[in-house]
Structure formats: structure tokens, C-alpha cells
Amino acid sequence: GESVGLHLPTLSVQEGDNSIINCAYSNSASDYFIWYKQESGKGPQFIIDIRSNMDKRQGQRVTVLLNKTVKHLSLQIAATQPGDSAVYFCAENRAPGGSYIPTFGRGTSLIVHP
Amino acid sequence: GAGVSQSPSNKVTEKGKDVELRCDPISGHTALYWYRQSLGQGLEFLIYFQGNSAPDKSGLPSDRFSAERTGGSVSTLTIQRTQQEDSAVYLCASSLGQLGTQYFGPGTRLLVL
Image (cartoon, rainbow over all chains, first blue to last red; front, side, top):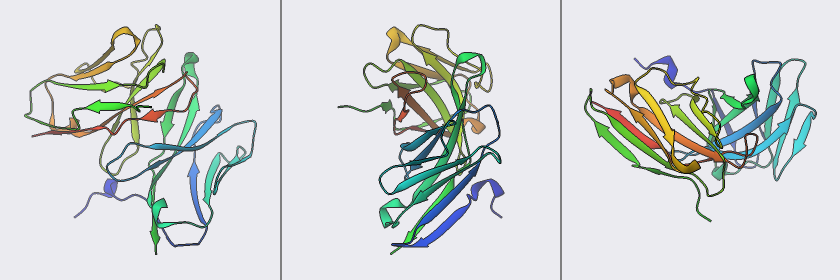
């Protein structure tokens, strides 16, 4: 059988739909959050970030929402395209001892059907 | 301009051998990170260099792992006496400062037989 560890949470959407990818973070002291996109065989690519003094930030076709009360982050992709198919990671940054070491979530696989 | 580059792109080695993985960050970036990514998993932090400060080695999984950064630019991650569980993709990232956007290289895929 397959290892549980190989199965990423998966979101399947139709081209043109809006996608929402969720992430729960662990540390209430985290003050900077980033979303990355990783296509197969490539390194992660920065999408959008948000600081803890904000609850919403918009980019091109993407919006990040931050709810510090429940330690939840979401990435909304408008009019999803096949090229958006990838694994999406959230990362939280904290500064123990002054150095910012990001902690990455496990990732969500987005599959966009044409 | 050039992004972060890593070499080799793929490395197959035998258990017990040492390997060296190289990262060339973006010119002028003072912060450099090494991560490990196992199949279907997120990124595991290994080590962080910031300017001339002592590196943060808190993520290195064992004393078989070490890294150095020469002249504040190129970095080498060394794994001694490799084990099969070291098989993973090793990713390097650089940023302008400690809170700057991290730019990742394509990774080195290491397979230990």
C-alpha cells in the first residue's frame, strides 16, 4: 500500500472557477506569512505575503486572508487556469532569537481541469 | 538577471559515501537558506546564513550534515556517510535580507542507494 505521507491534500477545480486553499499555522507569535507555488520538478516560487498587522492583501488574481484569532491563512485564486496547477505551501515566519526561520506547511495540491 | 542555481541537479550515491551540494545565490543577497523536501512533504529547514553572522544550524538533523558559505556568496551543503533516509530534494533559497522574499533554486535531487 501507499504511505499516508505521500498523499497531499488535494483540491480539484474546473478552469475558470475560483479556488480557495487553506492553511492553519501553529504559532501565535508568527508575524509574517507567505504563500508559495511549486510546480513539478521546480523550486517553490513566491506568490504573495502578508504581515500580521493586516488581515487581507490582494495581488494579481490572488488574495491572501489572515485570521489571527483562529490562526488561519487562506489563498484565493480567481478564475483558476490550468497553469495554476501546482502544490501550494503556506509558510509562517517567526523570530526566535532574532533570526527569521520560516516553517512550511505540508502543502495542498491544486488540480485544474480544462 | 540570474536566479539561484544549484548543482548537481541530480546525484545518485551509495550509502556511506560523502556528497557535496552547491548553491549559487542571487548576487547581493545576504541571506541564504538550505531546506530538505521529501516526497510529498513540505520543506524542512536545515540551516540559515545571514551576512557575516554565525549561521543558524538548528535544523540540521545530525552531525553528518554541515554547510559553509564562502565570501558571503556560494554555499556548500555536505552530507557525510550518507544514509538512505537522506534521499530527498535539497533546496537552496536566498533573499536580500532576513525578511526579504526568498528565491528558490531548482533543487538537487539526491538518491542514496
